[in-house]
Image (cartoon, rainbow over all chains, first blue to last red; front, side, top):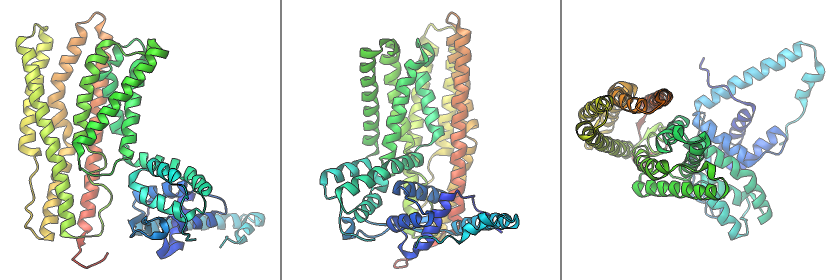
Length: 121
Length: 358
């Protein structure tokens, strides 16, 4: 099994946001998805910086679209997960699940029941 | 959320545009225009976006090893750091220069267009910044002013060397970004042509430098009344420079890939050329630093030992030269690793034919 670089928590959130946005994965929807997933206000700049870092690690790929009038004639930069990005996200999910199961096995219901808190749409 | 509103204030928009590095200007300004419904919101979002975007761009365009090497060179060889009254005297202009160059790199697009003019502007900005800072120091803290030899000799010479250094290694142009999995023949030829231009220019500058070094050091060796150790060092430097020039001419010059080859053959030849470059980078210490270094070390340390109490100066010089050579070697090893990565990407590339989308 191939192992990709380890991800920080915010990197995991941004990768998941790209996945969630699908074909519409550019700055604005990604930022909205990151805020929804992390359930807090996030600076758009932090999202751009993380996108740059993920691209440098070759976990995502980006390209510019044609300019659109609703953006003052500016183009959108779209993002897509690369194969390594999918592997890195999968590894992070496996690690998170392992932690969750360990907490559950320790019998701390007060901690693992927090998993039932719904994510903002 | 897709809106049709922008900042509503051309003044704010103009300033935000100027403060956004050109490489990410398109998407950042477009997202701001799409996201914000009022000038206040636009400004608020811009303030929360720009520092991150600028920091990220600086991280992407700054090579810490290169910055350290240029900084050390400027501090020691240009501002005579070890001969100033206080270490801060040479550190202030060095840090200012590095900051100006880092910001210039962050605001530059990876292109070779009008490169000579751009680099001339870099050097002019650097000179202006240092002279302005000297003016302020003259007014507020005269003890931190550079001494006359550093300001009148070392600094102009350093500016000249900086000009050629930046012309030789244009930031972010070579091997910029990842190769797409599918490329057209035109795209691959474009990358090869860009690479050839950069290397051809770098080799020409190096050859010019070898000729200049040989001439200057030969003149010192033959006609100056310098002590024998310095004349010996000069002689060794001339020999080293001649060897490096011959090596550059024989092995480092660009070997053009014919433009009438098909995609597969072009990629294969490019791969061979990259492998050759990778080996040259890995062996840089042997064919460049060692031949030039021996004479330089003997000359510099020899001249330091002629001064009263010169042992300390000689030891410091040996330390700085060692550090400079170490950083140069490290830079070339990083370059070799980048080239290897490009070769790995190239091995997976397939041809994109006209009308085909990725």
